[in-house]
Image 1 (cartoon, rainbow, N blue to C red):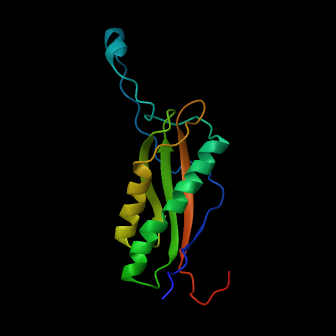
Image 2 (cartoon, one colour):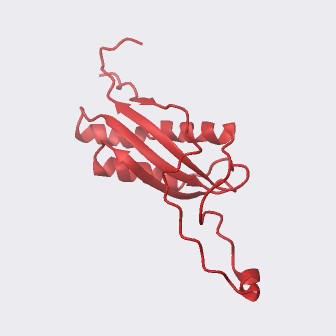
Image 3 (spheres, one colour):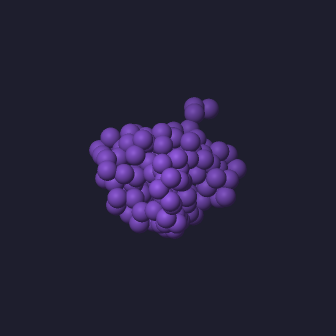
Length: 148
């Protein structure tokens, strides 16, 4: 039996200006002696950075890697399909501050796999600060008798 074709993962452009993540509360003011020693968390508060084309492309490529999460879900239910909207906060250095599902029609194990996939990724850094991006994904099984 030939291997099944990969699932379809449709990726509209990444919305880097989205406000899908709630802003963290601002830290209380620190005395000047504390401010020198305290590390600055680039992911606290609102994100005002701008996504680059490289970042948008990298997010789309990572969404393509979600195929492995979907293949696992298909092994349990070959008819599972649905939409997912993932909010990803990317720090100026490209590290991921958070990866949270906003919306999902997929099973819980797949949701956890998707969050984990993005949480441990590193992307090209945005310019001007952190960025809140939304990554929409659509998962549909591909019929074995479908043409190329």
